[in-house]
Image (tube, rainbow, N blue to C red; front, side, top):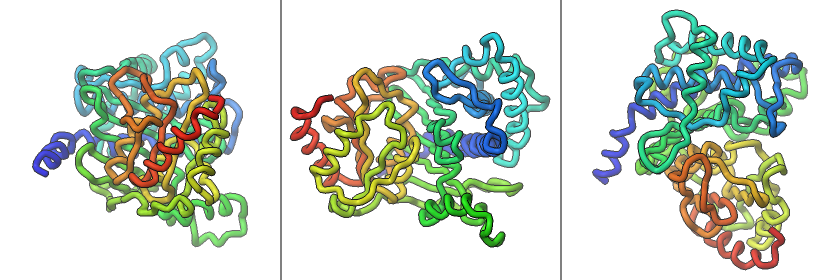
Length: 386
């Protein structure tokens, strides 16, 4: 027990800064998403792999990079992140760069609301490019590396749906803390479906504004603490007072497959849905799956809104550490289990990818369900065409 508390103490400051930084990033994304939905032209650029990359992606990267460097010293901060400086350095990207610089400055100006220092003067183009270029670490087995996914679930983001800002800290190849900012995942689960109805009708009474429901949340955990926490995203001009009415979250205690809810990706691009569906059937899952974008799936399990998330990548696709690091530590500290399909823990020490991953990832609310799924993988793998 002493060791656990020691571990918590070691990372308490990093965690608090990380949570505050993610609040800033979520507010940034919310502003860009509102503009994007009001006027879809112009803010979405297409990347080589055709995933929509937005001003938000690069702005979050620059903002998080600047704030972490400001708090811990630029020489002590290395960041592994998805976006490449190339996206914004290409010919013809001057408009994109200007939009990013404006967005970053707007966000950093409000950093004090979240208990962080704002820059003394506005950042110029070169400052912003420098902040983005700091995100060039490739991780690995030694040292400290922050791992950032600035907007996980870009499809959800551009549709006004679920997405995540994910920040984790890896030390000597192990994830030691994780933060998931979920701007459109309400604090109260029952509002999740109601939210969509709200957006589809204008006849709602103005008394029930989305802000009153707790429109979004931030989840976080320190490795070894045995605790995962949730706080609501602060809205309006309210100052963020630490710990912001945080409450403990736990995974669901459901261990009967017939009562368990499976989280499924909305996008089918990188996953083998038919294999997952076969597994779900063979272990006796009967409920309607919860289909959500991005790492919200890890958040749903940690909060007890779902019990299972499986991802079996299509051949040749390599899982990236920023898509999993923060979610895994939060689910585990909330009492859940996350392994590859062979039952081994995920290895975050091999660089930017989860190398040596056995077939896929299985995250569960508890050991009983997890064992049933691992057994089902072994039973059905031979007959699968993966």
